[in-house]
Image (cartoon, rainbow, N blue to C red; front, side):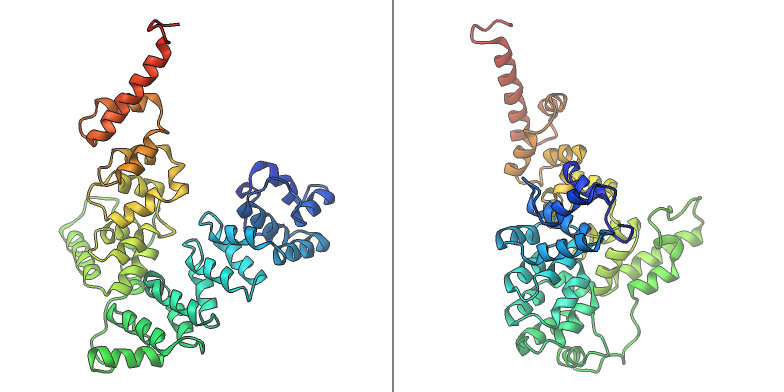
Amino acid sequence: MSDCPLSLEVLPRPLQKHADPKAPPPLRMMGAKGLVPATAPGDLVTLLFMLSFDPDEQVRSTAVRSAEKLPDKISSVALRSDALQGVVLDWLIDRVSGNEAAMEFVLLNGATWDTTVARLACTVPQRLAEIIRQNELRLLRHDEIIRQLCNNPAALASTVDAACEFCVRNGLTLLDVPQLVEAHRRVYGVDPGKGPQEDTAEKIMAEFADELAADDTPALMHAQTAEEEETKLTITQRILQMSVSEKIKLATLGNKEARTLLLRDPNKLVCMAAVTSPRITDGEVMTLANSRTVNSDVLLHIYSNREYLKIYAVKMSLVKNPKVPLPTALKFLQTLQEKDMKELARDRNVPQTIQAQAKAHLLKKEMAARGPSGGKH
């Protein structure tokens, strides 16, 4: 399966033998037929996707047919899962093409690639075109979505107009898209392209490659000269003056320095573009989980993300953060180790309820250890 973009490790260990090209054909065929018991819908779909790259043509074709015939109760759960890989969602939507409910699940799934949404935008029915319009972050982050939405004959004129006006008001006007050009005239009363050229994310990254191009290279590796300090300040000022759409693209494509700056932007969409960037690191997420000034929507994204919650230190930070809703913090509190419970019970900087619950948990455990008679076993 050299062409398969996923490794066996994305599957639970018991399923790996059904996708391994070195495994006996009957085992792989069992997986291709979907006959693996007690398999979560997302794992089953991922297995079928991987087997569609199997070296055996019969296994490949069987896997595709199985995906096309998946019961709605399985495909709907898989398509809604934000833990599913974007490449699998992109593949599966073609297997269930024509299913409006399935397309809706894909459009609403945060794990879906922007390119997948763009591919669907020109053909979805009227109701789904409106769902695409409502996802403002995607519209500004990926130009092709608004391009394709404008080409959709099923989309209401009001849907396209609203999408175009939103894009234009946030700095996105594509001169080759007539609807966007017309929206620009409606909003600003002038033709686009006649004013001064604004900075773009691509221009900033190309012009200041040393500062913004790569996550794995520190922006400055030596003592900064006055000239370098001034250049860096100029970059910051220029970024802050960029349009919302360009900030979103920079937040998505730029490096840690750019994300750190844009996570403080007053526009929620810019902040969300930074925290959902595919380049964001666990270290940055940890910093955000600790922050008491971070945008609440950014924090919500972190404590709702199952992958981030697998990092124990992130959960610990969320429990301590007073900006996290109390019910959520208390839920995470119950998963912490005893040594951390003791730390929270002594920490006066955490919310009072968290401290009290940690103390109560430790007291309850101590009482249980003493037994009914009050003495230790």
